[in-house]
Length: 580
Image (cartoon, rainbow, N blue to C red; front, side):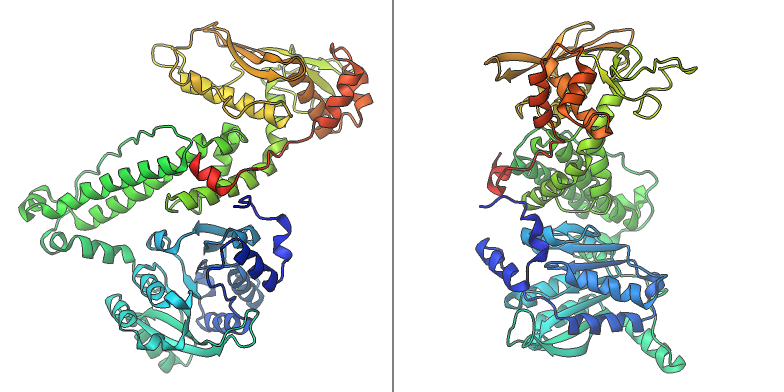
C-alpha cells in the first residue's frame, strides 16, 4: 500500500488521471463526477428557494474531489456577495480525493455506513451515490438525515423502489424530480439516465406550494424546523418508553470520567470506544424495561432522556478523539501539547461528532500531520523564547546592547523584538519554566512531567536531533517524582557511537527548574532560531556570532547545513499506522 498522504500536486490531475490513480489504489468506488449541468440545476433551485440568508451548511455524501461543494458555494456567493456558506462537510472514502479538497471542506467520515449523519445538522444534503447500491444509500440518507432539503442524483428506476417510498413515508418527506439528465458527455461517461431529485418535508412542501400560489413568490426555507432523525431512532428503540412515560427529570445525570488505557494501536482504541459506547447504549436501553410507574414516580421527561443519550454519545466521541490526538505516537512525536490543543480545536471543532473508527482515525492522523507542518517554526520559536531569561541568554558578539530595561525579565521576556540577536546557554535555570501539576500534598504529578519531557523531545526532533520515537517520557507517568531528582533523557550519539544524555531536568519545591541541554541540541536550536529570525544568514555568521560555544567552525558548517525546520513527514503506510 502506498504512503497515505497522496502527492501534493494531485489537485492538478485531470479526471482521467484521477480515475487511473483511484483504480491503481483500489479506491475507485464508482466515482462518476457530477456534471456542471446538474450542479447548476441544483444551484438554481437553491437560489429560487429564497433561503440564502438562512443557508449556512452543505453536506456532500460521497464527496469525491469536492467539486460539488465548491461550485454550489460559488453559485451562492456569486448571486449575492453578502451571503456565503460557512460550513462545507464531506463524507468520502478515497484518500486521494480527500487530499484534493480545499481547506474549507470539513471531513466528516469515510465509510458512509459507519458515519452517523443523523448527528450532523446541515441545511442541504447532496449525494450522487454509487448506482449499484443507490437504493440502500438513498433509504439510509432519507431515514437518517438531519437537514432541510436533500438533493440526490439517482438512476431513473429509483421511482420504482418500494424501500425508498417507505423511507419517505416514515419521515413524512416528499420527493420531486426537478431535472432529468445523463452522463453521456460527462467527464466520466456512462449510459445511465438520471433524475435530479429534491426531497423535503411533506408539511413544508404543502406550505411552500400554498404560499407560492397565493403570493406568486419564490418559496422560502425560513421558519422551517428540521426533523431530527434521532427522534426516529429513539422511537424505534424505545417504543414502550415513548408510549408510557411522561414527566421531567429534576436532576441531570453526572457525567462519568472515562478512563482510557494508553495504546498506540488504532484498533485497540477503537475496540475500547466500541465497548464504552455499548455500555452507554445498554445502560439507557434498560430504561425500556422499567415499569411506567417508575418514571411517573420519578417525574422523568422523555425529551431530557433523548438529549442525555445524544449528549452522552457525542461526549464519548469527543473524549476519544482528544485521547487519540494526545497519545497517538505519530502525532505526539511531532507536536507539543500546546499545538496538539490548537490542532484539536481547529480540526475537531466542526467534526466533534465524527465517529471513532479505524479509517477515520487514519484520515484524521493524515490531516493532523499535514497541519503540523504549519506549526514547525512556531513550536521551535515558542520553546526558545520560553527558555529565554536574563541569566540564560548570551548576546551575539556583534550585539552590543546590554539588558538595562526598566522592566523585569519576570514580566518582560525577550521575544525577538524587545531583545534579539542572542543565543541560549545550555544551562537554563528559571522559576516555573514549565507548567507542572502537583497534588494537594504538594507531590509532583508524573503525567505532567511526561508532557514536559515529550514537548522537549518534539523540539529536539524538529531541530534535527536523532531522537527515537519511543523517547517521550512515558516512563514518568506513574512514577514518584522526587524534588531535586535528576531526570535524564538519553539518545544514541552517532558521532561517539554511544548513548548520551539529550537533556536533564530537575524540579525543586520552591518552584525553580533546571534544564541542561546536550551541546548539539542547544547549538542546533540556536542556529535554527538565528535562521528563522533572520539573525544569521550563513554558517560563517553563526560561527562568528556564537563562537563562545566549544564547537568548531566545522561543527557549525555541518549543523548549519543540516538544521532546517524539520517537517517530520509521515513515512508510514496505512497498514502500519492501523497495526501499530
